[in-house]
Image (tube, rainbow, N blue to C red):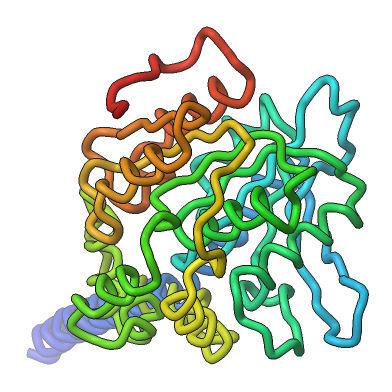
Length: 352
């Protein structure tokens, strides 16, 4: 009798222990999944940012340099540039200028590797973008940005170079070619930039938004960033809210006030040159045929304004973020145009 009771008790105890072990294992598994989720939630964009930095440093030998400009305003620009540039007869210098959607690393992430094979790249965070490009100056004009970049390139010892600018960076690039670095800019590539629009037309484009332009281009919510991504890309990726929140913290929090002032100045005065000068440099204009930010008609207008020295190429199935969605074609067109390379993509898909 006692033996049977002992056996039953032992069996019951074993069952309870097994259940406890299963319960503990399930709890540990749930906790592990929660920790992984929290880790991803907190670190995904930062991890990607660190990975980009490592790729530039280790694989491409492109290093960050902070250039301090002379003057009382303490203006600094962070540049990504060659760790040890060889003779410019081997690789010509190429300056890449980003837009409002990100800093230098994130904007040109799909272009660094391909373009660095043919060019010595100089890629700055424009003033008030990133954590190192700062200034106490009250100026917010495109002319101020162009002057800062031109001065930095002189301090870096680069006397002559090609320039590529996308969106807001296209305004800065055009201004450099026309005024601030006219004798330094060799050839110019303008991508999806409303340089040819009047200030009134730019304001009208901004007025079509359902919110203030600062909120549209400098979002502070996941929904706002998702809307911006959908406007900027023909095939936008599906991203969860926690990734979008992480990117906002990384890209749109620091120096938000100053960037809002840059936007207002751009809407008011555009490139700050009226009338828009006809450049002497050979120019390539690149546009996505699905651009929802700046209509492709503005690309045709700029090509007509510049005349025979300008070539216009429209890339199919690409939106405003042309350097991401059409990276392969963009890299090929830039290389072919700047180097007169015969092995690039065929020009002339959309010329007017």
